[in-house]
Length: 92
Image (cartoon, rainbow, N blue to C red; front, top):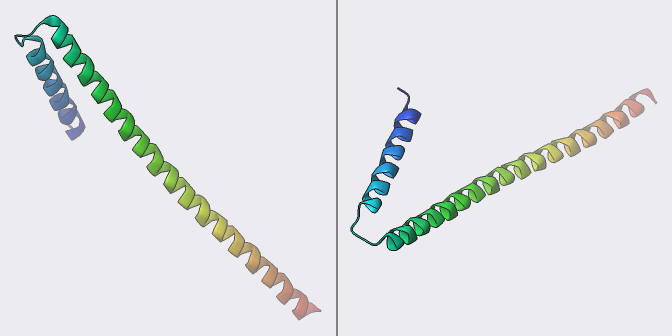
């Protein structure tokens, strides 16, 4: 079994256990619903934050690659111009 499946199974088991614990707790239903709602909001906020961090990291990498490509392109243009001048000087 792959480690990804094991991790997914573990997370699903933890979530099911937490949910069962909350639902079986000796509290009023309204309090339990408030707790569930708050936990869901916290989870969504956390997930959104992680996704934004991921997108920011990807954006930075794309900018780095674009800068490198621009630098290589500029260097190629300079070398091309130098080569043209050398050819003209040699032939001319």
